[in-house]
Amino acid sequence: MTLTKEQLQEFLKAFEHAETKPKMYITQQQADHYGITETDDSFVILKEVQMNLKVSAHVRYWEDGYISKDGINFYEDKNGEMPCRNGDVWEPIIDVRTGQILNWEIGVQARLHYKVCDEGIYTFGEKVWDGYVPDFMCPEGGGFGDYIIMNIDENGFIKKWGFE
Image (cartoon, rainbow, N blue to C red; front, side, top):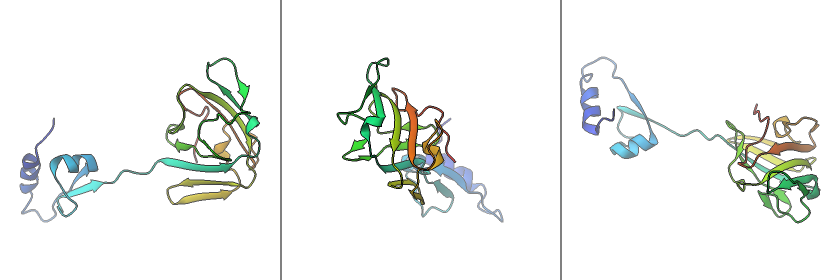
C-alpha cells in the first residue's frame, strides 16, 4: 500500500500533542517521491550504505590470468583482455554482499592467480588495506598476502566469495 505525502503527514499529526513524537524512517527514494527534505523533522531519511570494495592492484604477470569467452576453453591473458584492466592495474569494483564484480564484462569467465605483492590498495568506505593482499581477495586460498587468487563466472561473480 502506497500512501500520499498528505496521508503520511496526517498519520504523524495524530501524535502532535504526544510527549515524544515518532519519526518515520524512509529511504532517499521515498523522500524524493514525496518531496520530503531533511529539514522535515518528522522523517529520518536513510542514506544508502556503501557496499562496494574498490581494488587497485598492480599485477606483475598478466599471463597468470586465464580467460574463457565460451565457457569451455581457457587461455592465458597474453593480450591484455582481462576485464577491469586499466594499464598495468587491475581495478574491479566488488559488491561485498554478493561477490559480484560490478564492472565485469558479462560473458567472460576468468581464473586469476595474480602476483601483486605489496602493490595494491583495497578500499571499502573509510577502511583501506594498503600493501599486502587481504585474505578475502584469495577465496581459492594460498595467497599469503602476495597473490590474488580467484575464479570469476560469466556474470562477474567471484566463486567462494567471503568478505570480512
